Image (tube, rainbow, N blue to C red; front, side, top):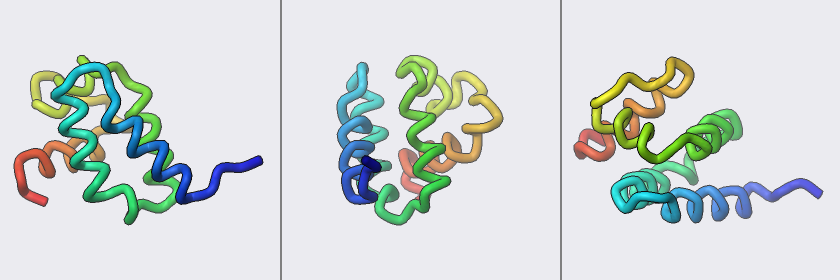
Amino acid sequence: MSETHENRLKRLQMRSMRRGIKEMDIILSRYADAHLAGMDAPALDLYEALLNENDQDLYQWVSGQAEAPQELGALISEISAHVQGAD
């Protein structure tokens, strides 16, 4: 049985706010609140791949302390801009 779009959004929202470190809980839950509903299936696939990454790596990428992998670079930049209020 396949997951409905609504259930997928709820699951991704939950995964965004229940991470491992509080900083990423805050960053990703706020980003998800603002953007998940407007994402198409490929964008949701990419966001879900990002959620599979380690929190320490994600934090370094979002904060600019380390370079993100190329396939996640644009999404990380978007999340960073959202954190900085440029969104």
